[in-house]
Image (cartoon, rainbow, N blue to C red):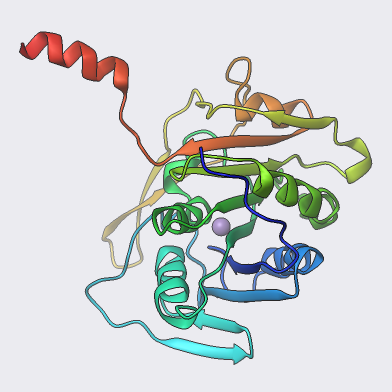
Length: 260
Ligand code: MN
């Protein structure tokens, strides 16, 4: 555990996302960041990159488009954006904090490994910069409740930034699909697991070629006490600390015995 970092007042915040430079959630997150500091920069994908995960573009060139003085669009993934921001655009003074989101929809349970929103925060963490991913849960056909994340976001980000943490840890926040007055509290959670497999839809295109479409409706069924899914299903904001080290230490010990 390092020392607690100083306040955010003079900090530089980088904002990114996976929904793209024009996403309403990005505007929400910039407003949240501007409650904390004046030094807010945005580097976000030119087009939507949801479920891009932690991929980097290494076999084609990337272009940066300057949208306005502290706002840039990149023809790549969320991880590309964070890397270009930290190692190129802001290399003279890298950000003190990276915020990713606010995603249109939850990033809970196994979403975490598919999520471009979480991946942008992971990339920042790899580069040694504290990072927080923010997602606003939304049931089908509900309008997204941006006021909820904007209401709780600034205080929550400020508090998480000040808590000492290991370098390899990032925070994943999910806001329930409720107006601010109905949110029941903040719960510290672990990553849950849904009891469902991905849905594959097979069909035939107008040229008689088969095609496949991945994904179906998500059911956010609770997955046991203390999970992110359970927290949001009871109306709470879920805060999950994630470790970049995916090693299962119990299994390391079991394998060492088996291979001894
Ligand atoms: Mn998204």
